[in-house]
Image 1 (spheres, rainbow, N blue to C red):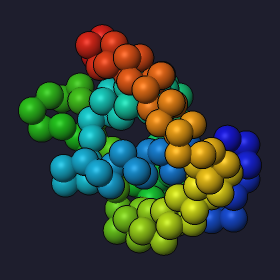
Image 2 (cartoon, rainbow, N blue to C red):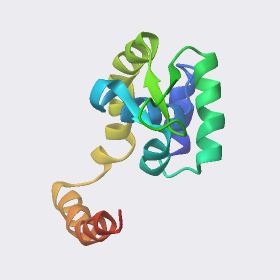
Image 3 (cartoon, rainbow, N blue to C red):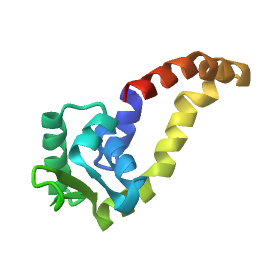
Length: 127
């Protein structure tokens, strides 16, 4: 993970930045409620708020009020954030393959999937 984080630094991103960009890019209208984003990225709301502030300063995301709930706030991917994830994703995926996936044989990968499947299913129930 440290290696992947270092590789993302070449694009002025951290692994946390990248994870947020991915979540927003895959969300409807490229936006998520801050509370949902905190849950998706396994961060406290306070930590996520600080992270979003740093990303706002880079022009990657903005915050918007939730008109249905005055207490709610959305994190929204900007055009610059979208362009960044489009540019960086192929390099990050290549790094994940190089450092992790390609180091395992097919049967080892299948074993990992089988081992983690019950854990993932249990975590889905807890949401």
